[in-house]
Image (tube, rainbow, N blue to C red; front, side, top):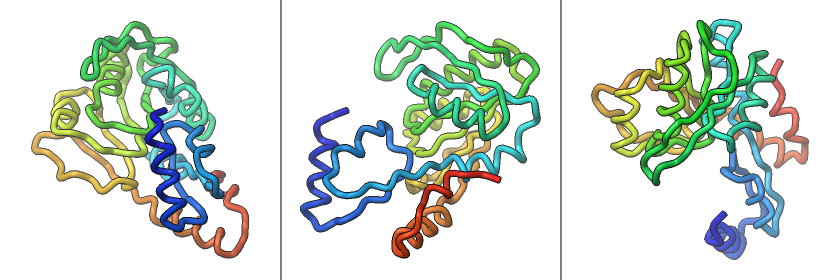
Length: 210
């Protein structure tokens, strides 16, 4: 984690913030950078409600790299799905070489989960490996979508059937030729959290799904 994250935390506190509400931090340890209360929400309830209707059981939730395993395991539990992991080796900042797939995906819908997509290199490389292994349909569940021009192009050329994300970051204009992108709103979830904090009620139940 860069030291600049601590600097931003200090700037927010100095500017007068007395409580922080955030969603799917890239590293949960960042909560410790703040000297004020931090409420860390997850986009999973929003994404999983949609995916329950979109995917066909028995599905597989896939971690596109080792850093996403914990998140993928959480989604697998919510979806009642199996878990698979794609092992990767990064060639450079732009290129990813996929090494191995652990898990059975042949003939099944797969959901790749990650917290952030920019160049889409990791998630597209993982999707390619899943297709090679016989995956039926490939979805994503990405919280923060900040695709670059290169990322949009990779997505357009990829085998991903549906790129599911949220509006935590204002979406860039969708590029021509890009396959289906579904953007789900987290406004209701955030609003309910703000309301509960104001009323001094617990926000823990917001992580639960019926």
